[in-house]
Image (cartoon, rainbow, N blue to C red; front, top):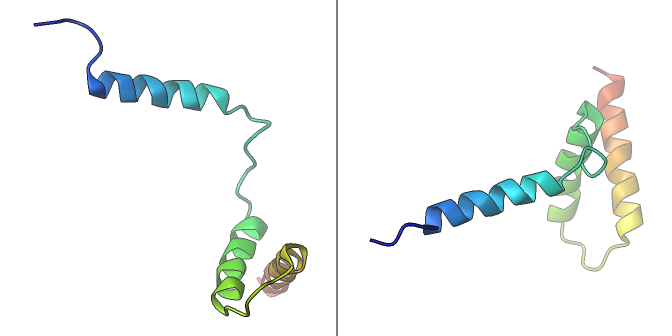
Length: 72
């Protein structure tokens, strides 16, 4: 039997290498505001109003997040 890299070891090594490339600069903390903006974004996008301006959608999602945080 050939000793070496098995498919599982290869996948594990690729996963470790991928994680090493992610530095703290590249990842942002998931704050309550970002979480709520993401939830609002999913609702906004599900309305399906055709072509949308991404900047406007993002602004609206954060407006909803801020609104929800006001009454926390």
